[in-house]
Image 1 (spheres, rainbow, N blue to C red):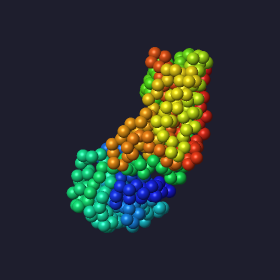
Image 2 (spheres, rainbow, N blue to C red):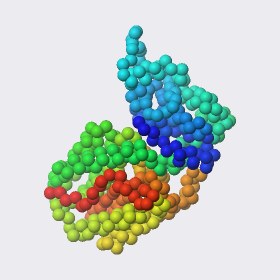
Image 3 (cartoon, rainbow, N blue to C red):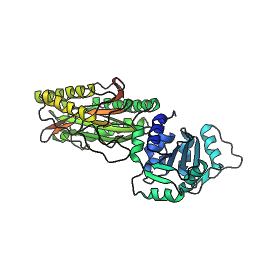
Image 4 (cartoon, rainbow, N blue to C red):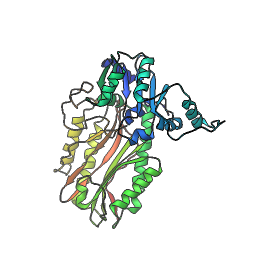
Length: 410
């Protein structure tokens, strides 16, 4: 796997905040720093894998538990040093065994490696000693008060441990070419899975049947289904999980679905009608379509989120949807479905040493945005349209082709 870490941006922000080491504990940030995607890393709440990026020498360490060593052997990522800890349950070696293939060789060699420790904290302490990090300033992607911060303070005596979730998000905001390729694959799979539902979208189809088909397409391609919202009729006015309800003539319906492929999120959505839409429904959709076009037209390096939002709302109201009152116009996207803790919306003050003072941060080139216009009218139906775009120095690019129209099914 090509390196996902944006080294230049990481180094710049670390120097700006006087940080010596980035310590990743969450699945998203471990993948970002090391390329490692383990099984237990995503299936357990407690941190089980760790990534360490050291400013002084630019080295990347991966600390991985015994049960995920097989995943490391299969997809080794790009860490300079791999450190294991813990036992390997239920494993013995046949006399005279010789590994065949790179995966088996990596796994077997690590079994006898000296870079094995009894616990994760021991492995992290070993990394700190070898990197000369005693007394360093460590930025950790954990909230203030996390028990892990206390354990790290004990193991890394004399070091300053900083809760720094948002420092990681600021670094990840600008995507590398390897990340963009991952995100394109994820987005294309999501669009393809939705397109495959077209033959099943008709009067009498159950919402749950559509969800099952989408999930089968997504999982069959090796991705993780994250969410699938689908509501018809009055239920389309807000994002809801699918039910046994069947599509009926005259229904408007809204879908919004997301998946994770190789650690990266894709998010898509739109709306449609069973039979010909009413003039009112078509007018409202045309209004949010125009609003989305105007909002996206503002996107470029240096654009401000609240201005994009205000343009979306103003255009939708001017073009025939005076009731339009969405609370936001989109969000960043990446290893998290919300790569920053704020969205394209009215300006709010932020209170974190690693974030700007307000949410009106000028967008940097290389940011990926989902720009969207969701709006529901209780007692009637909902409307939705969404596209994924890349911020560039002179404008924007579609991450993938996403033609949008009001879907009309028989």
